[in-house]
Length: 126
Image (cartoon, rainbow, N blue to C red; front, side, top):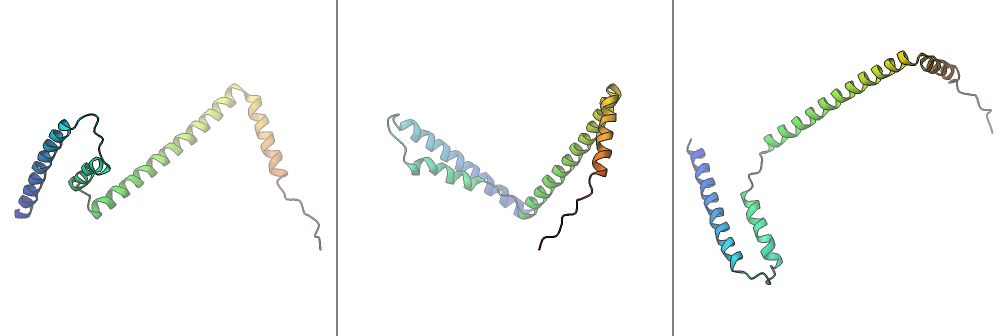
């Protein structure tokens, strides 16, 4: 419990520091004239302060998150693939009901290509 209290105290101190920093920076900004240009150091000074405030995830939490994203992505991929197959099959069947001649033409071309699929023998050249 004491470690958690220490962490909470540290977070509270950091938050109060950042609040003070934002107050002082807003005062400084209001004092600057609109004609005055900021230097590169002034522009990126806030970035450094923001990086100090970031609470980075632990290695275990990061691994869990990555695994979760991969598994959910694969699940959605399988679901979308299944839906695609179902809709394509349904569309083909529905198209065959309303246009039976197209269905017979398609089966005729399928059988023709199956018999023609044998590779031709090429004469050996030496």
